[in-house]
Image (cartoon, rainbow, N blue to C red; front, side, top):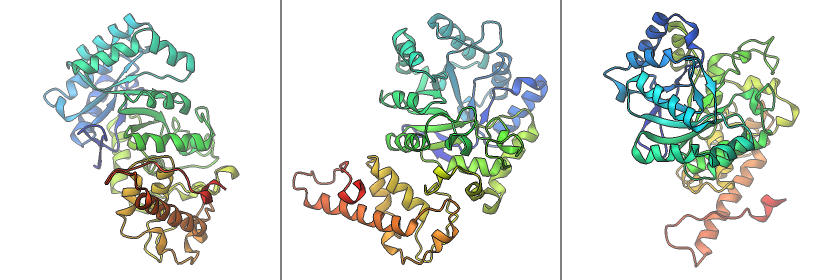
Length: 391
């Protein structure tokens, strides 16, 4: 098992968690066996947007005596008036359902409290004005909610929440099809989605991934918006390579489902390689580095994926990206312009030209810092793009 630290917290989250929306379709004894197995094998993040209230009780049984070993995502707006999942923005109903969740799990807190599934502007305004947001914030002050979060399928709404400066985590539908604008939930333009991931990382807001397989469509070429079959390992690796991502939350209904996704950690890199996407993505997606590192190894020793990632983050104002870049053992100036990366890039990124731009960009930042007499010693400044980047 691998873990990633929540930027605004001490929690270390397993990079594979468990989404529990449909686990209720399995018999209760199978659900309980599955949850015991998942906890025993290191999965510690559980998305508690369950299809039925009964699952909360089964989860409570599975974590009895070890509640401190797991993290829960509970959703404000997921309601269970008839014991089945529903959605509501009515504050009293939201409060009542949250109390039912806590009681069923036999806990007095949730690690992550999510404003549930805000995809439209009017929904955002409603929860901000009807007391829901203030209610969840008050629970955080009391320690009943340890971290504030939100879930959405829409980049524009995610940015609205990020702008509050109050959230530590979010849940977003993320996979290669959606990122290329394909599929039912492929909301937002490619660049907009990429900027969302970068902005979340810059602000230290962790992303947990829903729909990593697009509801299973990506695993079946006949159903896939990409018209090709991907494996679970490829989808998981793709998601974990996006900036800001902490954890993938595939669903599961039995022990074998858990074994299938945990096999990711034992698989060799060739089975996780998603560069085959270069044959399927729209032409407009070409030329964008997705940090897949299919261009490796670089004869000059450059970690091309990381260099590109820190460059992209720095350009949108990430205060730490420059420092991360500087700490790399090999920088863009080590590029010998041999073309190895471009010959092997499935997305046809012009990396030789890009390495020159990256070298000039970070050199510019360093020189700007040295020459800026008004810059306080040791501080980090968000610099404007130099002229060569504005062309």
